[in-house]
Amino acid sequence: MYSITEAFKKAFVLILNLDPELLGIIFLSLKVSGLALLIATLLGLPIGAFMGMKRFPLKGIIVNILNTFMGLPPVVVGLFVYLLLSRSGPFGFMGLLYTPSAMVIAQTILAFPIVASLSNSAIIGVDPVIRQASMTLGATRSQVTIAVIKEARYGIISAVIAAFGRVMAEVGAILIVGGNIAGYTRVMTTTIALETDKGDFELALALGIILLSISLIINSTIHLIQKKGEAGINR
Amino acid sequence: MNLELTASNVYKSYNGNQVIRDCSYSFDMCDIYILTGPNGSGKSTFLRICALLENPDRGEIEYSSEQRVLKKDLELRRRITLVLPRVGVFNASVYRNISYGLAIRGIKGGDFREKVNRMIEFVGLRNKKDQNALTLSSGETQRLGIARALIIEPGILFLDEPTTSVDQANTGIIEDIILKMKEEHKTTVVVATHDKDQAKRLGDKVLMMNDGKIIPT
Image (cartoon, rainbow over all chains, first blue to last red; front, side, top):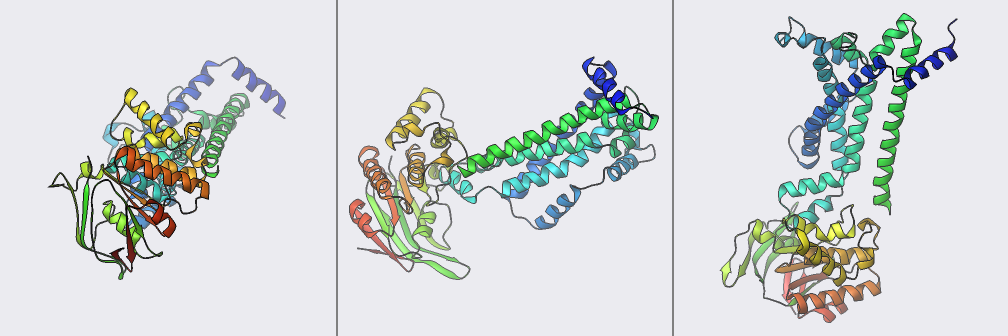
């Protein structure tokens, strides 16, 4: 039977020695997820802000769809992106399948509804009197919007961090569209799946520890931000 | 530069409920006007219409300066301000709150800091300057609201129930600030209050509002 203690020991050695393969995988994971998060934020924040501040027909339906998409199963997104990017798909000519770009696309689709929906909730939660106060002080429409977004900043930051947590931990979609190619599209979660299948637990455990640490940092940051926001409101 | 405001035959209703009916009045320069009347008489709505936050259903709000009627554009909106009963402080320091009006007008540099510090001093919040504004008491919050409005040197300042839910000591401080605004800043001030004693203490002219209409007293 494989000794778990032995595996943990070897995993820590890999981490402490800054193993190049390990670092390469971590770097690619952060690059793919970071880029996906950036695109999702650039798209999701303005849409969340618009929905939070404007009234328009079908708004309720759109909010419901976004809320539903927050729980999109990653494998379904992977399948959808695969069909779009595969050779016979509408975007097959771009040759993006099994590249980091395809992984960014899949993760953007997963992160976008989280950023948009939670930003929308954060903006709806801002006291309406803030909007009126900035108007009475002579703010233009865009300045009023900025004032409201600033008030919702803690909720928005939490939304972005939550989306980052989701894409970092995701495996199904990137496995389908990235193909888990060593040194090219292999990221932390797909490596863990592969190495576990192979019975090589050291690298899988080392990456698992790092993923858990990232998750811990993300959760602590969200907690701190929310505490800071609440402290301002409750004092 | 001061503004003159003329309201002519203003009407406003919400969901079929007539709140303001045939309201007309001319506000001249550099006086303190008190708009008094029972709750629900339409004071707040009238102030919101005068401050161009809402449009009347019928009638006209006209601002003029030196015999010239002004267009209702951003420039005019930036010369009028209303302090709401719930001030609406930003989740930021007292300094940042008070400086907001200057920041959105693109004012920067030493002049900016000097003006903000002078205004903080004027409303007696110097020792709270770096504190989060959400931590202030209700009286201090009202003072912050007045400072935030006054720093932009408005032609007309509307104050909607500035001393409701404020203790006696802070009421006195706020009333002193209102009187000083007229003397030092030559600002025309319109105060909505249901406190008749306050109306007597502050008002150059006291207007009674009843059932959506202004009745000069």
